[in-house]
Image 1 (tube, rainbow, N blue to C red):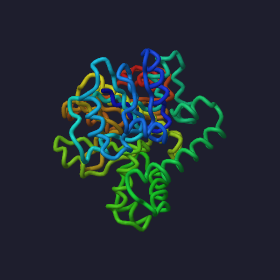
Image 2 (cartoon, one colour):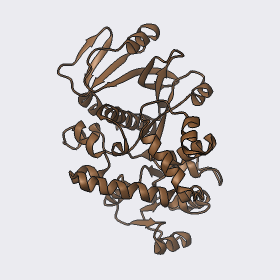
Image 3 (cartoon, one colour):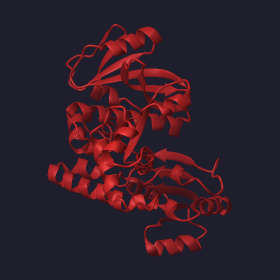
Image 4 (tube, helix red, strand yellow):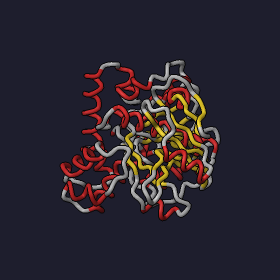
Length: 357
């Protein structure tokens, strides 16, 4: 099977239906639709179905056992595509294991690499302004973009959150989200947010885990050979939708770089089967590098995101000198690419367009 996951309205259903065009007898069923729900539960599709698409099936109680049963008894000619707008691993607390029965593919908003692949210019300013979700990006209309985003977030908070927890204090969870928008790119303290909202740090942590599971935001943790220590250190928060970031152009550009790098990391994991993570670097004296791509527990490359500064900073030069980690400084507004003191000064648009997706 293939599990296709990603944020709501990122294009999963469109992609699934487009894939279905290459099959002669495909069936698309959405668990959110009442009539489809009955068909799913009764397994009322023909045996000669060559592609079965099950959308939002993770909302079904005992979905793992159900899908496992379908897979284990299906005809050899049937392919199965499972899609969902939440991290399916968040629903794997119970039920039989699906290990060895599926490949995962994570679909994220438009990135410079994806735009280039379709013959479009890698317009970083447009991505920063509208975000990479298809609806606002393709509208080219700031008002339509804002209206879409308001409805999108309200729908997630007041509908999808209830699939995880019976949360009735919407005011608190909305306030946590608003505070996180202001802290993009900086280490986040659960205790500090808890004090601002008037809730416990554990509740803040739970809310952030829900936001992660719904593909609203993602955490970038500091790299450490001791994984447990890395998890305990303060993470940095970024949003899948750049339009949600409450900050200046520099912060939004950093968020764009984060999403693009994460998309690359997911591709390395999902397509090649190579373990790869997106982290950041930080020493005890708080010297920091924005991003570090780590493969097999070892840093492969460190990356700094700068709006216009084309001179390598102290931190990236020191990290390069002490640990011999290759370094790249991505600059959004750059006249000439070059190498200086073992650090590559690269055009952000050109480098991000070259990433795997």
